[in-house]
Image 1: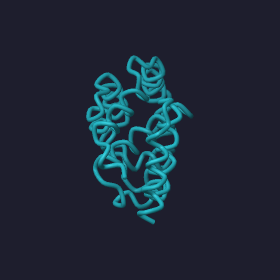
Image 2: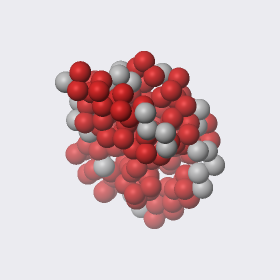
Image 3: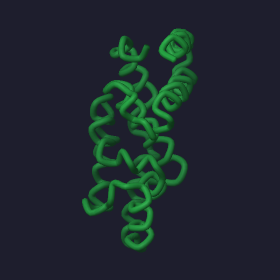
Length: 159
């Protein structure tokens, strides 16, 4: 498996277009950790990359509510650090705001969290999360470029 992933990584690193490279890398890293089910299969750099990509995918797909509700929410406590680590300080602040809105009582377990969210969310919370969504969607930082730079700086960790 390591040799197969190593060959995939060599091909991915040759991709010149940033968005295409990020997408291809996300696919390989996602497979490596079984789409987050085996997150411990990733080293720290891969984990940071994976978490930023999961968060971006989920928030873009349905806002922070979707991120928290879906399996990406398993990594909610790590999103601020992950975005900070790649240099996305404004995005990290938006994520922190969303976490503050949702509160610290949100369960970590996926099934418990879904049930809790269904009972917890109300119009006021949804309105505040919607503001976070809007701030995220403004893309004040180029997340693909920041992730690309992060991957290139930690290239040895992505083998």
